[in-house]
Image 1 (cartoon, helix red, strand yellow):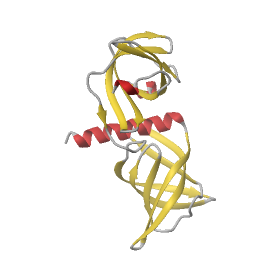
Image 2 (tube, helix red, strand yellow):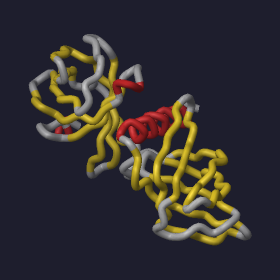
Image 3 (cartoon, helix red, strand yellow):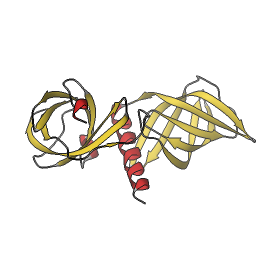
Image 4 (cartoon, helix red, strand yellow):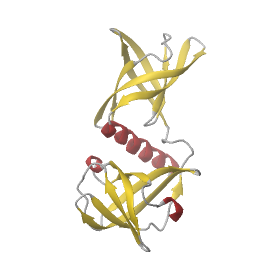
Length: 193
């Protein structure tokens, strides 16, 4: 696992507060601890538990660790004792049965989410939507409201319905991190059942 904690390696870091969610880069690696530089400065405290994850050749690496020291936007933390490879996809994908509106050029389509990740979504519609066209998407996840642009890259006919899979082409870092954290937590909850 230590081979993935190297200078300039990018991670996502999450703390108890979603407002602290950020991208970060490894700045320095020592024998017992390593330091990261936050892309967006947050409020972290010594002895606070944080979660980090990144993509590797083996899949998505996830671990929890403890903050050792905080100096402005540089956070030092202890090497983790345990870690997990969660999946091979870049982002965790979870099942979700939720109705949402899709909008494009003044027309609204009723859609039902089948699964979602921070990178994209799979949904079902009664009407066929167009490949590679941009659709405005609004999703309420827990207490957060996410706005983004959805671009279908695959559409299949399933009986009388259409199943569309696609990516988010315009999504803020904050909304993407919110989705990453939401999918991560749901994935962990589902594994612990």
